Length: 71
Image (tube, rainbow, N blue to C red; front, top):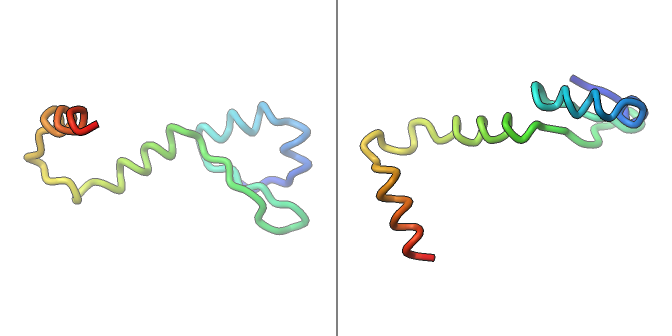
Protein backbone atom coordinates (compact mmCIF):
# COMPACT_ATOMS: atom_id res chain seq x y z
CA UNK A 1 0.00 0.00 0.00
CA UNK A 2 1.27 3.49 -0.79
CA UNK A 3 0.53 6.55 1.34
CA UNK A 4 1.89 10.08 1.69
CA UNK A 5 3.83 11.47 4.64
CA UNK A 6 0.81 13.64 5.44
CA UNK A 7 -1.45 10.59 5.69
CA UNK A 8 1.11 8.90 7.94
CA UNK A 9 1.29 11.93 10.25
CA UNK A 10 -2.49 12.22 10.49
CA UNK A 11 -3.14 8.62 11.50
CA UNK A 12 0.07 6.93 12.64
CA UNK A 13 -1.60 4.26 14.77
CA UNK A 14 -3.69 3.02 11.86
CA UNK A 15 -0.76 2.78 9.45
CA UNK A 16 1.51 1.10 12.00
CA UNK A 17 -1.21 -1.46 12.61
CA UNK A 18 -1.55 -2.01 8.85
CA UNK A 19 2.22 -2.51 8.56
CA UNK A 20 1.91 -5.66 10.65
CA UNK A 21 -0.14 -7.16 7.79
CA UNK A 22 1.43 -5.60 4.69
CA UNK A 23 4.26 -3.30 3.65
CA UNK A 24 3.46 0.40 3.67
CA UNK A 25 5.32 2.58 1.15
CA UNK A 26 5.47 6.23 2.21
CA UNK A 27 6.01 8.92 -0.43
CA UNK A 28 7.13 12.49 0.04
CA UNK A 29 6.64 15.00 -2.77
CA UNK A 30 5.64 12.13 -5.04
CA UNK A 31 8.90 10.21 -4.50
CA UNK A 32 9.63 7.04 -2.54
CA UNK A 33 10.59 8.06 0.99
CA UNK A 34 10.45 5.01 3.26
CA UNK A 35 8.93 1.54 3.57
CA UNK A 36 7.39 0.39 6.83
CA UNK A 37 7.47 -3.37 7.29
CA UNK A 38 6.12 -5.31 10.23
CA UNK A 39 8.77 -7.16 12.23
CA UNK A 40 7.00 -10.50 11.88
CA UNK A 41 6.59 -10.13 8.14
CA UNK A 42 10.30 -9.40 7.77
CA UNK A 43 11.22 -12.42 9.89
CA UNK A 44 9.03 -14.69 7.77
CA UNK A 45 10.67 -13.34 4.59
CA UNK A 46 14.12 -13.94 6.05
CA UNK A 47 13.33 -17.52 7.05
CA UNK A 48 11.61 -18.24 3.73
CA UNK A 49 14.75 -17.20 1.88
CA UNK A 50 16.65 -20.00 3.66
CA UNK A 51 14.47 -22.84 2.35
CA UNK A 52 16.47 -24.97 -0.03
CA UNK A 53 19.78 -23.64 1.33
CA UNK A 54 19.92 -25.50 4.64
CA UNK A 55 20.03 -29.29 4.28
CA UNK A 56 17.07 -31.13 5.77
CA UNK A 57 19.28 -33.40 7.91
CA UNK A 58 20.78 -30.53 9.96
CA UNK A 59 20.45 -30.90 13.74
CA UNK A 60 19.46 -27.41 14.92
CA UNK A 61 20.10 -28.20 18.58
CA UNK A 62 23.65 -29.34 17.86
CA UNK A 63 24.32 -26.19 15.86
CA UNK A 64 22.94 -24.01 18.65
CA UNK A 65 25.03 -25.80 21.25
CA UNK A 66 28.13 -25.32 19.10
CA UNK A 67 27.44 -21.60 18.65
CA UNK A 68 26.88 -21.11 22.37
CA UNK A 69 30.24 -22.68 23.19
CA UNK A 70 32.02 -20.52 20.58
CA UNK A 71 30.85 -17.28 22.18
